[in-house]
Length: 74
Image (tube, rainbow, N blue to C red):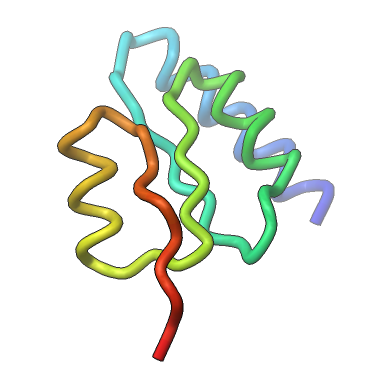
């Protein structure tokens, strides 16, 4: 797990260096501090989406990363 985190941070630095606009979706049940830190490292917008269904993903993309309120799963 530690190696995966290091690899993700290294890759994020490359994305930031080339000016890639990014949006990081955190689909964990609770906001993950590591995902938030990775988004900051990339320079990405951070969108926590604990219930990431197609409509929520689409709305977040259209709004530039502002996550829609969670919906209940059925």
